Length: 318
Image (cartoon, rainbow, N blue to C red; front, side):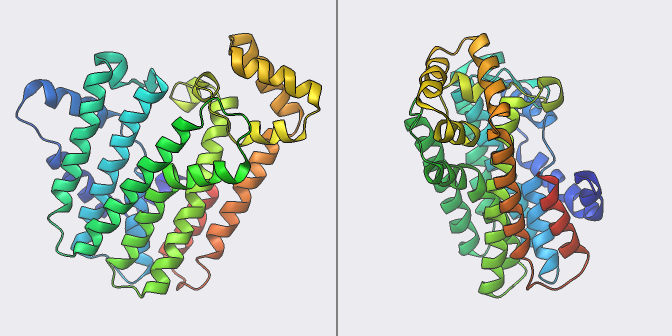
């Protein structure tokens, strides 16, 4: 199975989410409308809306709030990407030029803020206040994770557990929220909602670990975005944490020189030793562990097409 096959199984509902999303981004100011149209062209696979809908289906069926929740979470996610591109000075996102590279940081920051305000404007239409509070709490957690990552830049003694705490906040929180609210909007019992939230947390951690691996080892033509930004911005990720933990003192001095100097040659040498040391493989194995944890959280849920898709969707991450 690939992501598109999972999408096909909920195509009607996903199209409804897309239509709602597009309507909420309409703007009668041409210059702003152009900016919104630009980022809309490079919308990804819409993983979070997909998880809202599949979590609802596995818990008995979809209700009207599912479409709204899915659209809101995608808006919040897109806002974080626009802001991320400013922080990382990314030139390419989903094979298109980023807003900040086209129009500058100030425009990108305000556009991200606009997406968040549109998201919560739509969120206010939900009758259940618990939905809005859950989304707001997840957004708070994402911002905390991003701030933590900023504050730990150029800190190369970062422990693996701290790294996992950061990515569980900045990436996994919104994915977990998608799964929880998908279940809650289907009137699932709280233990079931918690199972799906845990599934989303483990899935999100694995997703970010693999995204960090791609940033170090991937090709921009395949990834569709600027790579090497973690290295250039002094962000140590799981492969580097593992490498610095297992290397000799002499190797560590050399590696730290690369991390501080950050020339193209340093980046090449760093990538080479990450492969040779087994640190890339270590990170991939850790991601697989979290995928297995995610799948275990689905064990108590009823079998069916949605359950099967959630199981298989997790495997696509690694």
